Length: 498
Image (cartoon, rainbow, N blue to C red; front, side, top):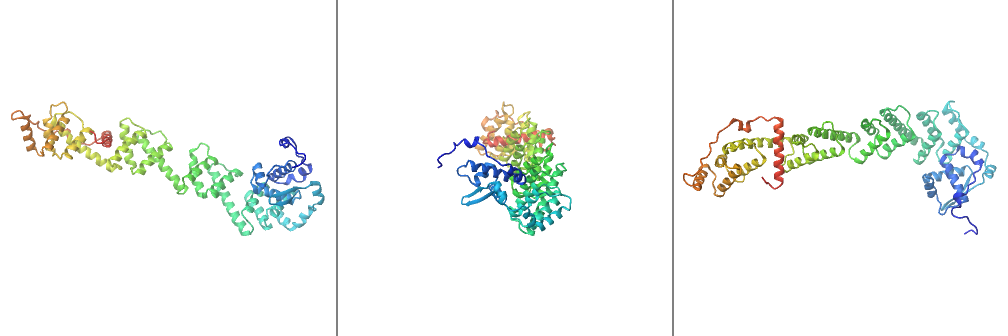
């Protein structure tokens, strides 16, 4: 440790001397990040930080480590610093006045690159004058980035073709660094890079035109497009397909398009066009369901779309969902949660298609026609209900009673306060006694009641208005009947309670 040292906070309030010579002769033609590296390193000379390294300096300056390394290479070539260690890497700053006195004559660069300079100037065809800093920038590509001279000339030609003769050397420098990182060393490498670059630029220009912007892209937009194509793996056609979705925004932009592609990337699977088509189908399906619920002017949310898609994935046909939605609407229910309950009842009964629902409707119509005869026999003025349908199915199924026996029991129940319940008790008693025909049922009734006290069976008349199986239902009646079926399904799901 030194005999004398500064306090830790001294450096923050001290100053780092920067010579005007550096500003005038070195800084003006140096890349901006390279200047930052030089000045920060100069401060380290006066106030060394513990454990300083290329990585630490890169983090402090907000650049990558490769930029710091190339910056020191650049300043070493300029004669401003000298590398004095490799493990760890260390640099010594030179006195700039001494460096200028001992450095080679700058004109030697001109002489050394005389033929190259002639070719370079010819590319601009007297339409642009190059200055010393431009030449120094180009020499840096050759000496620091290690790009061959023929590659550098093709890079300049590429910039003129794509960006115009007045292109920015800052932009060209970024391309040179990209080529160096990509290992471009041959004409074939250049042809591949320029072809890819042209395709990307043309693709980006098409995107901007789709967004209603007829101008050259900014550097940030170029980086965005490069991210979509190179990092995320989208094709130019994928990006074009995604542009169609920007019409949902009042002011479409590259940022909005970026959000669309980010969503598509997270979805994975099919290509963008297919996924967008799937999304449009999901939206259309949800709209149809909401329309059936009489929510015509309501745009489906993403949650609505996921809900409807989930029903379809379970095996429901869209037409079946719409049928259930209309039934819910007739009862004043207009939410997807209301519809969910009805579809659960349908699922318990295996009604996933419109065809299955129609078959259930036909069966219900047939049951209603039979119930009309039961009501007539019992002297009832009633409309078929889910509970009565369940009773009828139990009589004909579990109890195995023929229809004429059911009608006989109903006639014996006429005049009772609850005729259907009374008829049910009669039929259960006959079933327990093993009675299954009209003759035996009458005999049992007469025996039980006593000779002369038996109730005379009410004659059953065929009334045309009660022949439900032959009626033609309106849409409203079918929706109401469908709702009864849903309630019947819910009853089944609760354990078959009638």
